[in-house]
Image (cartoon, rainbow, N blue to C red; front, side, top):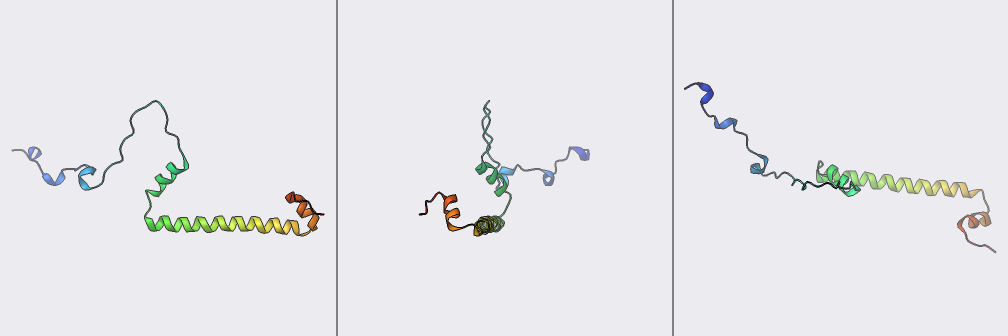
Length: 97
């Protein structure tokens, strides 16, 4: 028998579903498009990271957002410092007598 006709079980490729990893189900074919929402995008990127990496990125994003809000507040207060209390209240829509 020629060597090309022998079967070798070590070169058999098994599908991903038999190794414990299930591929994501394919959506049914339709003419409508699936809307891309922030939740869909987040799930795509989150699936490629571990839980610890996701937690670390969430903390970094939280502290950056907090820093942004605080810096906006500080700039607003610094800009309003030169004005009197009546001018500052006027910007807020509060009537000072």
